[in-house]
Structures are given as C-alpha cells and as structure tokens.
Length: 140
Ligand code: CO
Image (cartoon, rainbow, N blue to C red):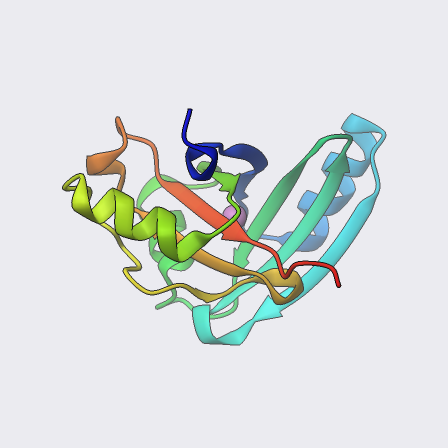
C-alpha cells in the first residue's frame, strides 16, 4: 500500500452557533477537556478542540455571517460538518486527488489551527461527506 495514502482520522468537525455553550456541553457529556481554542480570522471561524483520546471533536463557530461556517449554519443549522484526516504530505495528497478527478475546495493548503496546513475536498467528490486534510508541522 502506498505510504502516502495512509490517512488517519484526526477529528470530526461539528458546526455550532455558540462556542461557549458547545464547549460546556461536550466537556460535560463526554467528560473530556478542551485542548485548544483558536480563531482563524482568514476563514472567519473560531475553533475549539475537545480531547477524545486518539481523536478529537472540533467545534466550529463563525466569527462573521459571511464565513463558510456561517453559511452552513444558516442553511443546515448546527450539526455534523466534516471529517478530517491527518496526512504526511498534504500537497502530495491534493495532487493525487486532483489527478483522480476530485473537486478540491482548496487546491492550495491554507492555515489551520496549531500551525497546521489544511484543505477541504468537496462532498460531491467524497460520497457526500465534506472532507478535510490536515498536515501538522513535523517535530524537530
Ligand atoms: Co476541521
């Protein structure tokens, strides 16, 4: 099997309207702790990650109504938003997917939380699931 094609589930993304309420809800229901909270102003989103052992739940709230997550909430309401896979080399994976004919929302990676690079793949090319790839900076 191609080593570069080995994807690991990094987190499940959930769209919420109030980040504070959602953090309290998940901390209480899962008995889990918040591990990171960060605003990505370029994407108009505020993120909170709840630690769930090997994986995490990412709560996403818009910082402005015209952000992609704001539009999602307006049309779908709060709920399941995306699944994110951790990959070793996001540019290699995006090139492979593009060559396979997948529709990429981000053909070039953009900044994500914790100095990561992220890119979204259209649900039209992924069996109806909005799919995110993440590459974390390699530890020296
Ligand atoms: Co995500």
